[in-house]
Image 1 (cartoon, rainbow, N blue to C red):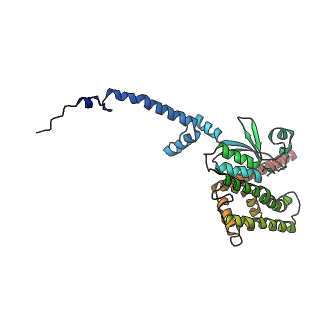
Image 2: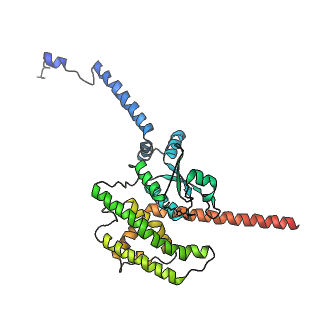
Image 3: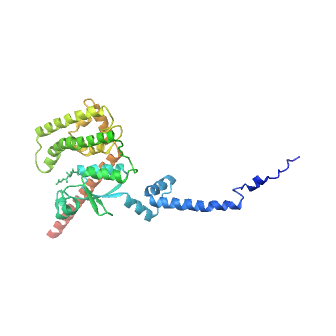
Amino acid sequence: MAPSKATPTEAEKKLVNPVTSKNSGNIFPIFIALVVASIAWIFIDPELRRGLSSYTGIGYVPPIIEDMINKEYTIKLHGSYLSTCTQRVLVVAKEKDLDYDLHVISTAAKEHKTPEFLANLNPFGQIPVLELIDEGKYVYESRAIASYLERRYPSRGTSFAVNGAWENTIYDEALSIEAFTYDPTASAIFKEAVMKPKRGGVPNPEVIAAGKALWASKLDVYEQILSTRPYLAGNNLTLVDLYHLPYGQKIIDAGHGEALMDHKARPHVAKWWKSLSERPSWQAVQQDVEKWQEAQIKEQEERERKAEEEAAAAHK
Ligand SMILES: N[C@@H](CCC(=O)N[C@@H](CS)C(=O)NCC(=O)O)C(=O)O
């Protein structure tokens, strides 16, 4: 005999079946609110917009939204691809997953010394300068610009947050070491070995040798520091580590960078340098620099070709 359906008690009658009950329509406003909130969130948070597009595999992002994303995450920098100080900012921009719109300033043509540049961009007449387009403000000093990018986009790309009084103190210490010890000793080699011949001078091997010895003696201290921690300011990569890249690379490219790569003499420095210089951000900056240089060469060749054509036409 089939079990008879039990008669529901009064209490059971009051229970609402969420599927069959007419009251189930009550969740509709909640659903709508969630959809509206999600859409609003997508508009408010451009990172999420881009993320959603790549996570879902839906490549299409409406152009108006793509423009918003691009604008939000593109920095406008006045500088030069070849300048170490500009490259210091570029590598941080890459780490923060920001695009850059680099307005090339020709230092050879003294574009950084024009009254307009001095009045508006940097009264010290140097590059790089970050332009905050919507706010009509400018920021100079490469390290200040890099810090600004971290503060402005803390949760984007690599986080360079430093927390704690002691950690920040060690960070400040490393900042000073880079700016007042590494930078001047490295730039002395760079100026003699690279800049001097570019300006028509003849590099003095004794000056280069003395510069390299001094730089190496500073890197000996780096070796001590880096034997106690993987990065200059502690266990994590910070901005200050990246700040070493442009001068280190220039000196290596000039054939004078053994002190940074000597695994026997300074194993910790060599390991640290390798980990920094192999970062995709730095590789990408170098590719951008190369592309720019190639474009410059092509432009120059084109100018020369046109000049030859014009000269030939004039002789006809
Ligand atoms: N401390 C500044 C130094 C800026 C600087 O020396 N910039 C160089 C290019 S790397 C420059 O503008 N040189 C041309 C000049 O000083 O006239 C920074 O880090 O931004």
